[in-house]
Structures are given as structure tokens and as C-alpha cells.
Length: 210
Ligand code: TYD
Image (tube, rainbow, N blue to C red; front, side, top):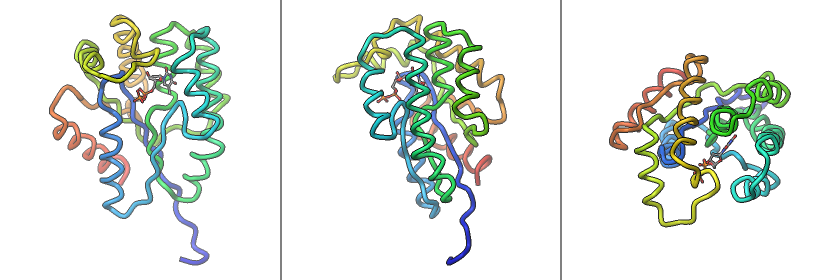
């Protein structure tokens, strides 16, 4: 309506180890919210802006020092927040993002061994006042996820090619973060048929966002 400002949108993120099935559930969630008449934008990290997508290309395919990796993840995130996420939420759009800072905690701290104090400094710098309204952590055993990745025919990226113990450390770091922030991070058992997982995700959204 003219002159009436729309309420700030909700920010929902999807997380989980590679092979957890986030991307398809994220698309289904966008359809679920669209069907309720909500203005939904989907995006991803690293990426989501022209510069961020270039950084994604480097991050997924070029070997680099672990701190360089963490800094580039947050550089892409700063750009994404400033140019896409914040303006969208301000306009009243809902933003559903495939991964956000919990992924940096899980992959760079848990997987690669970045000091969590350095992660916290970057997180505070890049988004001190903003956290997702809801994070859906799709959890499943890393052995199951590993089998799903192995069945892929496309070329795998640098993270997907990591060994099983890397993916197990990433999973444990995600679980640790979920225990530390139980209001925001909802764990969804993703080792179930897709329809069951979809229903669990919709229940979380109805409960925490609508
Ligand atoms: P992913 O969502 O798995 O992309 P796709 O579904 O196209 O394979 O994200 C790409 C990879 O980036 C994933 O393996 C995890 C990694 N990643 C990090 O290591 N740290 C981060 O902060 C983010 C956002 C992603």
C-alpha cells in the first residue's frame, strides 16, 4: 500500500555437510513460502553477488592457506550482505540462503583447524548485528553423505574431494554450534526419505517464522 512500509523480511539459512541434500530442500522451501504469498529470494554462499561468485570460483577450485580461505569466505559474505541480503530484508523480502557463517565455523574451524577466536573476530566484524532468524541444519552421518557424493557424476570441488575424516569434523562442528545456539539453529534429521525431511523443515518454519 502506498506510504506503508513493509515489515522486515526473515532471513533463513540452510546448513549441513556436503551431500546432506540442502539445495533441493532449499528450493522446496522457497516454493512453500511463495505459495503462502511471501516474497522470497534464494541465494547462496560463497556467492550471491557478481564479485561473490568470482570468489566462489577461487574458493572451490584453488588451493590456498586456511586463513586466506576464511578471509575470502567473509569477504564474499560482506559483499553479499551489503549488496543483496540487507537491502532485501529491509524491503520486506524473505531471504533463504544456502550456507552462511555457520558453514565457516564448521568447515574452516572444524574441518581445517582455524582458531575459533579468529572466526569470532571476523563474524563480529562482518555481521555483528545480524544473525539468521532461523538456521536449518540438515544432519546425517558423514558416511551416508560420503556415499551420496561418491555417486555424483559431475566434477567434485575441493571440499567435496576431502577425506571422510574432514567431513566428520565438519559435522561435529555443526553439531557443536547447534548446541551452543539452540534457539536459532534447528537440527533436522536428514537421514530419512525426502518427503519426511521436507515435512520437518516446513514444521520448523511454521513454528519459528510464521
Ligand atoms: P555448497 O553449498 O556445497 O555448494 P554445492 O551445493 O553447489 O556443492 O558450497 C560449496 C562449498 O563451500 C561447500 O563444500 C562448503 C564450502 N564452504 C566453506 O567451506 N565455508 C563457508 O563459509 C561456506 C559458505 C562454504
